[in-house]
Length: 347
Image (cartoon, rainbow, N blue to C red; front, side):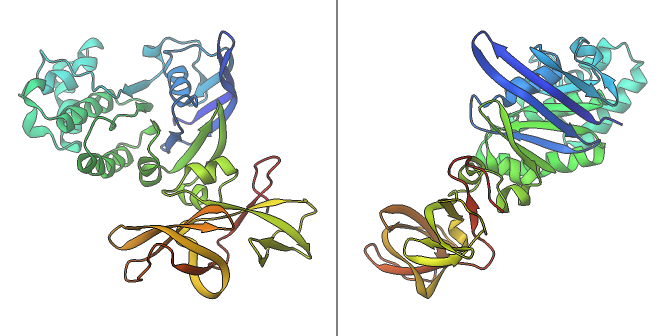
């Protein structure tokens, strides 16, 4: 069992507070993604779990054992970095087996493990090559295989696919997710790429300014963001926001239209909707198309709604021109509402 418990972990660098009282439990064999923009604290948290940084306060537990006082080699973890860290003077076989040799495992056990993980990563035909003869994608597979060969309780990955081109990243995402599921290893994956997070994670922890804003499944984070930051960070393009004024009885006025909303006494809310969740109707928001971007199966239309920028995704078969007036309404059940004071979601 390799459940990870992060308890009240904080980290400061002088006057700069990188992490603020982080609490997070990662289940055994779960694939957790730490997602956020640069400087949000995700890599710092990963390095604290790995033992490469020391927390200012708090505890880290793996499999019911407190490990934050242990050296990295005693924590039962393996790590994959962004820059591959593959030894150029060693063959692929020797690279994968390097950590096993350091543990002085018998030759037959080293061979068994290397061949097993090479098969998982589909690089068994490369075992006799040197890293200089490999592509970037092949080197990254070697780095992942080397980590898996250690049979760690936990594998930590810090933006391991960011140096690959777009097509190779897509292939590696699917491959890596399948390999980790097969190896039954608990994984923590750091990225700023929401596509990686959405496509790979069992759960996503969205981080902002040293805090975990929301930790939930990808679909929950996408459909029910807990805060305005999550709604504006997740999605490409992100959610649209418009001010909403109370009309009484759970009714709210949004850009001249009255819609059902939360039954709250708040004097003002933010109405939020994803671009793909708007539809053209006979009555609704008046939107003036400003920019039309054909994107294959759909078109992205940037509009002006009551002086605010508002994006909508429509079917590519629809003919929309700049300057054209559109009438838009949200699909039933898709609107979200946020408190502008706290920036948190309102049920």
